[in-house]
Length: 162
Length: 117
Image (cartoon, rainbow over all chains, first blue to last red; front, side):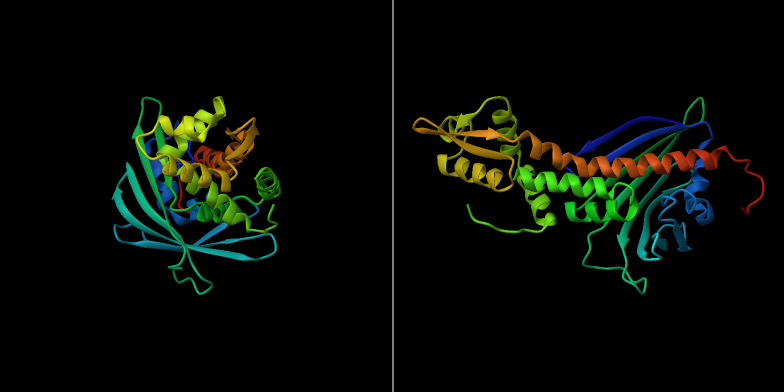
């Protein structure tokens, strides 16, 4: 796997990552569409993801939670906006409350996954569009525990500079 | 100076909100290169001195610029550290994706026959 590029746009709150795999698009599609495969890479080892529901059909959705080192659970949901097997998945990703119901107070992220066939396999482009900085912070906290100490130091640095 | 303890979210929101405006981004880019008074800045934009002054005040509250006295003038300067800190949250998100892609790569390297693991 090669990461071709990753592009951050702090002003537009957008992040784009492009990677290439030797597997064909039909195989890369499965790692998104099969919840058991998705669980193996979506969350970091310290915060593994469990998809309780994953209906990969237009208008369908997912319910998932991530389990932290102390057994704490962070819940979320997906809703599929656009699906074109095996080349496009567009979904809304949001937070849920403890019962698994979508938390309407938290804004959502729109993720767009494009799978393009290349001579050697697949080029995958993932675009994440955030609504607010607060939401981006929460996602970072849910998704990357290892980076938290560092993140806090950086935010402390920001406060010290202000 | 007024002592206040805003939340971290408020601080970061202020930075991004300040940078969400084209004129303000332009002001930041300019004063990072070269400090300038509000009057000099106001000459460059098709808006009133008061409007430019308001933009500078928003940037100042977000910690992106500060004013420094120089003789009779007060010069606006960009604060590089704060601007770098604003980009760091996206760095964190990028790290999440790098981790995901590594795990994805391991998964794709496995034999594919059979549905179960």
